[in-house]
Image 1: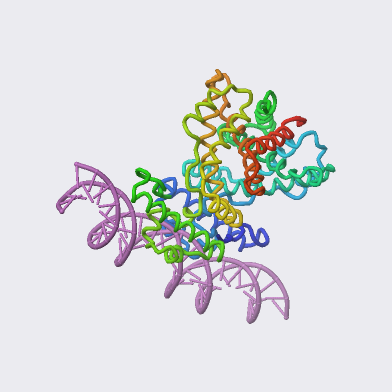
Image 2: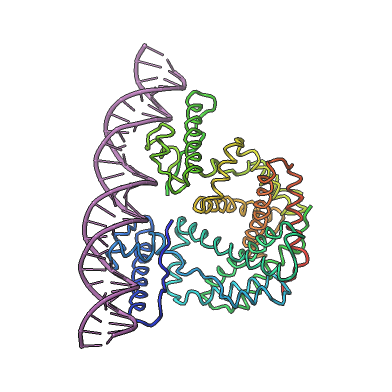
Length: 217
Length: 217
DNA sequence: TGAATAAATGCAGTGAATGCAAGTTTGGAA
DNA sequence: TTCCAAACTTGCATTCACTGCATTTATTCA
């Protein structure tokens, strides 16, 4: 396990950072094109490097691993203000507020739609990459659990009073995350045309359907 | 990505299968002991082979990959009768029935408690292994989604009437899976003393807490 | 007992990943 | 502009996971 360098390091706009972004993008494009062509398993790092005209060492400097080049570029964590807004939220519903926070993060994290589509297609047709993407998501979820806990504490609940408060938070996150996956799917299928409100409405109905009219024995 | 040979192939009780089981267990033990000692990252396949006195080639014949030796032995899928019972279940609650089916599968899948404990400890202190274990679990969840769908169809619901029926199933599974994780945790923490009823009760309360008194906007 | 079958091993080779020690390019201060 | 330091790229050697293939050894069963 190694860290890859952050894709956007240093000040923006300098020659250096522009070159860096260009190189990163070139490698990504080459890698995805090759994989879409020959299948993920049959693409070697050497091939990617040849196609994008960098040394193997540079490839690993950028992405840390062969998979790295295919996975989501950024951590896609919400900004500090978004988090603060959620934690101290008016609180009509944890579900709704959490969903909105995540949605707000996802939409602008990957500005490059063409690459997003290509990568999405590749990932969803390559089991190994899909698994890695799941890992990535589950790491993000870990942060969300922290936010939900913070919100609970802000609302006056305590671990002393509810020993398994964290488990509760974990399950809320897992539920909302499921709704999110559902919404993303709809979004991609619909060519990114739906508004956020559309997606929220769909997810809302879905969650209501399973939380209402269900009785634990 | 490669397949590892099934741990228990061929008839049980023969010399061959007994030897096979013994070898597998010996390698597992050696691997886990080494990792608990030196840390997962610092254990090479060579070390494991030396400690368990087999060739590297044999190691890979058994487990297919270095991680393989650390992960859950069997697929831990419920038996056909259990599934049938769930699908045609009396149906007071999908949550409850699904939880019980999974619980029934987990308890007897890993008869060897000492190894279970050691592996559990190792996995939960090694991020990389934890991730792989999550992948494993998410693959199992995929099957559960199928079972829930089957149950829905058995109950007369249809994809025609509810286009996102599968998403609903997916979310039910994710919720129950969360409850399961919670229960497992309690079970391990309590040294495997609680009865299944205890665990169900705890999980039940947890799910109720998040499905009741929550209102989507 | 004597094939047929399964399992274990050795060996050679591929490809991912890392560390190190060069070179090259860029940013910024003098 | 000039020049230095920091950032970046690269080549090289090495380790390690993993695979295919051929060979040997151990079980099974007729």
